[in-house]
Image 1 (spheres, rainbow, N blue to C red):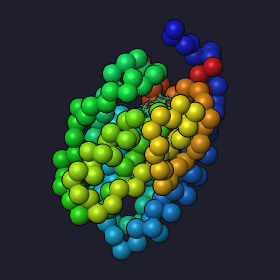
Image 2 (image 1 turned 45 degrees about the vertical axis):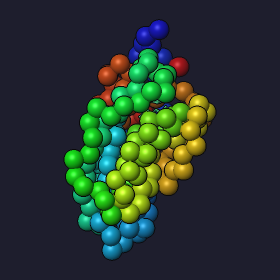
Image 3 (image 1 turned 90 degrees about the vertical axis):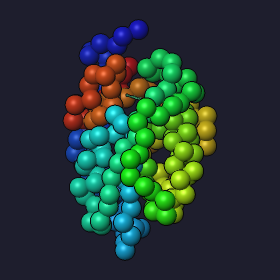
Image 4 (image 1 turned 120 degrees about the vertical axis):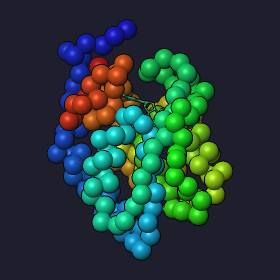
Length: 175
Ligand code: 5GP
């Protein structure tokens, strides 16, 4: 069933997002002092978080993106994940930070991390704006997390519903 605008409730304000992004960037800048990590974003939902986070880092970095498609409906991950866009820069021997918008079942992340590890990076750490553990199927160890949300479907700040609402500056929950 398509949800309407009336069923959207403000959950995380742009101010709270901004504050948390700055805190995570400080933490990453400190952890990677003297290094030059490769930030890899998982498209499309990550774009705003990625852009904001990257600009707050005080260390040198390079960036690239992957796009993962999961078969099944928009709101429920089916478990079958494939990459429709791969990284284009070499990551062998480099410290990689994988940046996600939201980790739900963990299936997407598990698949992407597996593929990245095959290329022998120095390390792979995980950074997500939102950790939603309720439907977790794969155990994933998250190194940097913006917000932990128990359940619900979120839109805004990159997160979509049928490709809409990505440009909302705040995060809403569909009820
Ligand atoms: P997972 O494979 O962890 O189940 O799903 C990860 C992907 O599913 C996210 O990158 C995101 O695209 C989508 N997803 C999971 N939960 C939500 C949600 O609450 N809102 C939106 N907009 N997308 C979600």
